[in-house]
View 1 (cartoon, one colour):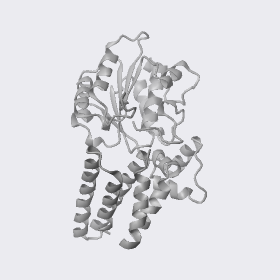
View 2 (cartoon, helix red, strand yellow):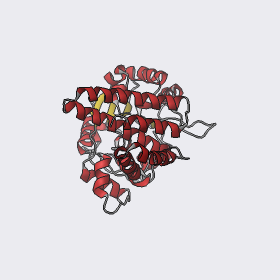
View 3 (tube, one colour):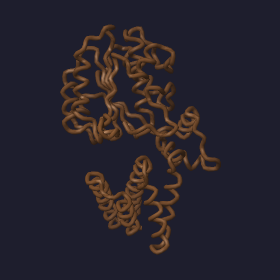
View 4 (cartoon, helix red, strand yellow):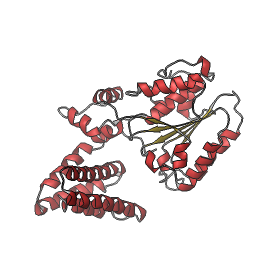
Length: 339
C-alpha cells in the first residue's frame, strides 16, 4: 500500500463507501449463506475503494461471527464499537493487514511485500483465537508480493485453516500467479461513476477547484486516488504542462521540459512522479490504440514499441537509482519524437 495521499482517509478508518453496492450485497449474502469462499480476489483500478470494501467486510464478519445471524447487507461501521476501534488501531487479534513493510534503516516503505510478511500470516493462523472468531488476512495489494512471498501465500491458500478468510486486493489480476487466481473467488469492482466519485470526494471534504470540477472528474477516471493527486498533489498542473509540451516545437519546448523535470525530480516528489509515469504510459497506449483504429498500423506498431521502451526505461532508472531529471527528459524526448 503506497503512502497516504493528502486528503485521504486510511481504508481501515473510512466509514463510507461509494459506488459498490452490488459488491457489498454479494459479500453479505455469500457470508450469510455459510457457503462463502475462503479467499476473495477484489479486483479493480487503484483508488476506487477496494481496501475500504475489504475492511468494511472484515468489520461485518467480525461483528457477526455467526453467518446465519448476520445482516443481509453491509452497514457503515460504528466508530464507537470495540471491533471498529480495534481494527483502526491495528490491535485486532482477528485481522492481519499485509502490505509493504517499512525499512527500519531508511524509514521508507520497501518496494515489495516480502516473504517474511506472508509468514506472519502463518503465525497468525497458528495462534488460537480467544473468541473463536474468524481470522481475516487482507493482502494489500497482492501486486506487491515478490516471487517468494507469492509462493508462500499460495501454500496457505491451498490449505486454509478453519474459519479463515483471505481478502486479496489487486490492481492488475493478470500479473498475479495463475495458481493464486485459481484459488480465489474473483470480485471485480468498476471505476466510480462521476456522481459517486463526486460524492466520495465530498465525504472526504475535498473541494474541487472552481471552474475545473468537470476536468478533475473526467481526468480521474473513476478513481478517488487520481482525483486527490490532481487536486492536492499538483496533478492538474502536470497534465497541462505535458499537453503544452506536446504542442510546442523543439526550441520552444526545451525550457519548459527542464522546468517540468525539475518539479518531478524534486524532494518528496514520489507521488507526482508516479502520477506522471502513469500519465505518459497511458498517453502512449491510447495513441497506439487510436492509430490502430485509424488503420495507421505502422504508427501503431511504433507506439507499441515505444510503450515497451518507456516501461523498460522506468524500470532501469528505478533499479539503478538513475538521475530522475534526466530520466524525465529522456521520456519526454521519446514521446515528442513520435508525435
